[in-house]
Image (tube, rainbow, N blue to C red; front, side, top):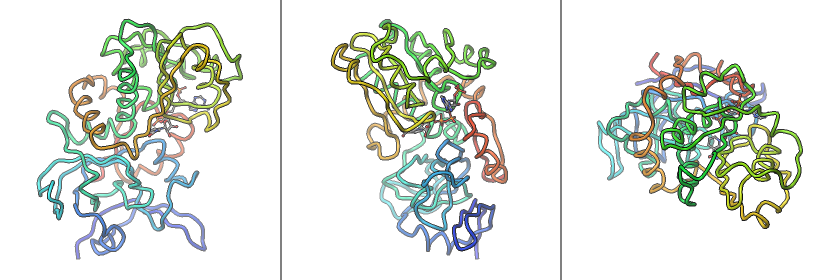
Length: 333
Ligand code: NDP
């Protein structure tokens, strides 16, 4: 019987438990049998959502037992899907993997071929997971701004939650495209880090996180918001006439205590960004752009690596907002 290592989440009479286990191929088949491609995972990652699942902090996991991990990159081992064959290098983000379908914080996953993106040339599986859902969502936000016509010369672009995963990649991408990026962070000690990624200046996140007036002094031509709540409301209230706000996160809160004033008086455009069910053409566009446009040295500078056995200990850190940039997980170490 062939086995593989995985993080295993259980919920039963004894409550919730999370542990590193040795699982059988039979268990994978029994729990993820609707997957038609078996992938030998090389790297996974810990996103904010993985942190929630690993710590049982929000109802991310909706089927038990669960192997968590919303992201994985590796090599196809076996395939019943016409689009993939053994040896193909692939990346997986979202689609409910790690939530309702066994995920990628494991040495092996059984996934649907319709969910997989071919790893673009020039990206290693480790780099793909250094990017992960956080970085791919950052690219979706950049695409949303550009699809609305925001150009590099149009004015300052605010990135909130700047030292986090989405924020760090968004700064690197926008700066690389020539935008003037202003980073909002609660970690003023990360000034050098954020400026190295390309931030032109920093603001303290406390200037955005309290209740504010419906319309404020116009400043932002564009916004990438990973924080939600008052921060998003204030970012809209400070957006310039016809500014564009891409909203993807809720690190401060799920609420949006705003008025319609910025939208009906300044024509501000609020664009929602979802990575989980994002259609394949947009995913492929995002990944091929990431391979071409994200500076490899900047990506490495925002990345730390942990073995699978340490993935669990990252969860409380990311939920407390203490993780800088991205964490990749070497599932074979
Ligand atoms: P991280 O934890 O890496 O980063 C979040 C950052 O938000 C923190 O580093 C911190 O930045 C800031 N922050 C944390 N708590 C607060 C607070 N109470 N008030 C204001 N700012 C705060 O998470 P990710 O970057 O991976 O994800 C960011 C958000 O985006 C999450 O809410 C996540 O769920 C969401 N997300 C959504 C996706 C989608 O499909 N829509 C996909 C991926 C992520 P700093 O220290 O610089 O202030």
